[in-house]
Length: 104
Image (cartoon, rainbow, N blue to C red):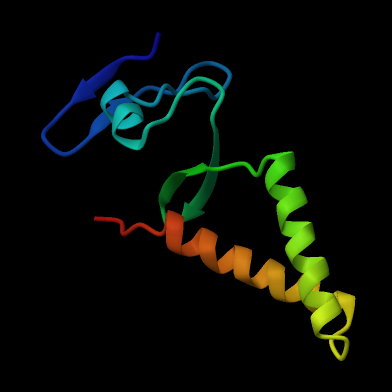
């Protein structure tokens, strides 16, 4: 079990032998994280930033493909590749908005 120390603004966790850490309960609850959820980890400067990732279900993909096919049929002048690129760009922008956070 990692050793956790708390202060007013942060919780500190010790890294285990295999590089694992436990996200403190107060943070998990605040973000609605549960066992099995997926997170992204990245380096920003000298910080490690961990953000929740929402996975897209197969049903969501089916709906998206239906919309893409409809758009493609309505816009015959646009190639299928351009439609996919537009969708990828839109998804990336939504992820940025949804997971954007400011560091202290």
